[in-house]
Image (cartoon, rainbow, N blue to C red; front, side):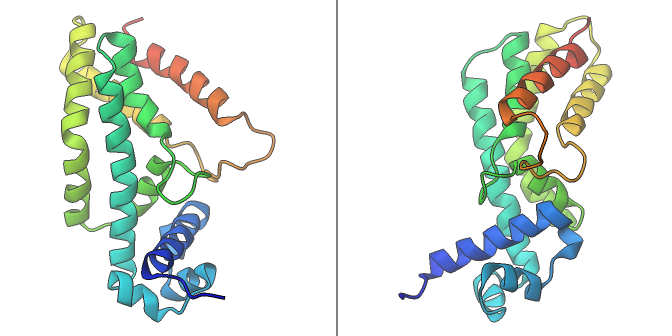
Length: 195
């Protein structure tokens, strides 16, 4: 059996960390647990990422990029109230960078519980322009809503998208991803609109 390439090893380590982060939280991570879940030598985490902080940084940036790219796609589709709501919420359902079982926003939320301020700033830089565009479009579509109220509505909807633990998409007895997204979209249209 052939050995993994360095890229394959990195991907296995990232997938293992992503799975542990979503399933148990970032505080459950350790070099030993990540390596064990990946079936790799623990020294490879330091070799490829410089340690768990470097691995979490890469995982956060990959998941942040998934959301930012999705938002850019939705912003390019048009403006108006419903299109702006979609540009806000649809990216919150973007699949995680390493596993289609999870959402990127859930991975980012867990990593933020441990991240240093420099990583917060780095990730926010990925989102700032897209979020500003969404907010401006929503403000134009809702001229009777003041800026502070709109900001709170956006925060409320974004926080609601995080769901409650366990946030594993494979939960039994739950709606499909598409059903949950459709329900969440209805909620967001009402929460953001001046109804």
